[in-house]
Length: 114
Length: 115
Image (cartoon, rainbow over all chains, first blue to last red; front, side):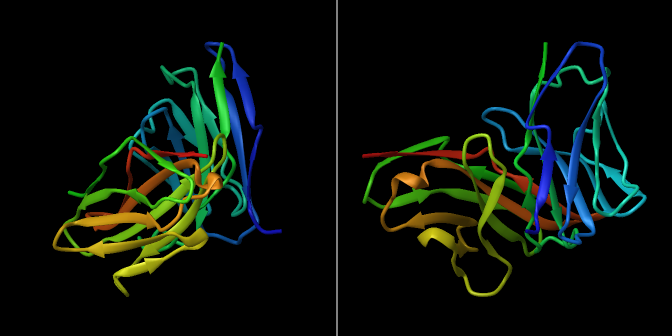
């Protein structure tokens, strides 16, 4: 089945540690995205990538890093510089970044800093 | 600059009654508009989208939305609510901006369905 897979579903991190969230898609989509979701707020864009080996900062990139070495994979690292990392993280992909294409979402990773 | 406002943070309906989730947007050009649904601790799923074709858009699960340019609205409706419709709904606007397309998510409306 084609889709987008995020792992793990739940993640706990100690303060001061970096942690990497996985996102894999087999939809052959060029564009991939990372969003952060906090209660009562819409999704906010962290990073996006339009093509392999290229990525751009979104609205809230500080404290995060990404890589896009393969078309299928777009991992997100939450660094110790991110002041408030506890949130629900959603990865998405689409055929392109033109505005009329639908995004396909993974099931999300809930990150909790303890 | 573009923006999207979901007018209600929570909506509660009884099963079998109509659903109305309101969304207003602002856009400089010709936007694409979407409604997504999110069930608890899940990703988002596309319900429907408007991309400058017919102004009345039909989606999955009996939902539909009407693009009203004069009112800058894209309200989501369903004639008869089902218990399985209880979820959070996001209105999304995507428009051409300097540097490319920009997509903005509304804050979401949580729909409660009472038996």
